[in-house]
Length: 85
Image (tube, rainbow, N blue to C red; front, side, top):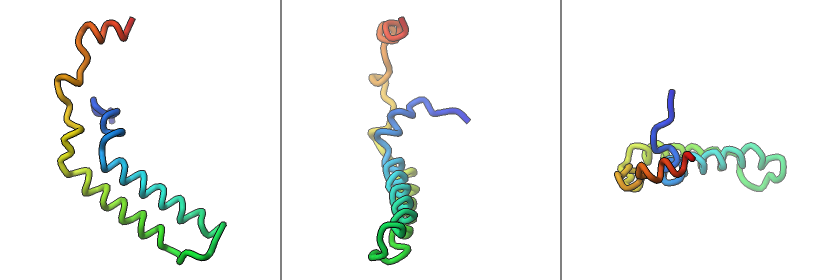
């Protein structure tokens, strides 16, 4: 496996990544919360994590125009050479 060319843009702009991070956060809260408090019904954060993961999956296949790599996003030859000196 190799990274896609615009992986940095995807990490910072893609809604699928954002929703998967929310799902991970909810899963972590669900795992840690019983240690600290029993006031929230068990499984609430598991449901929120699953819902966030599903939304992230849908977001992955939706058009996200901010992620398109444009010719202007690429460095010019001069910028590339200057950055590698």
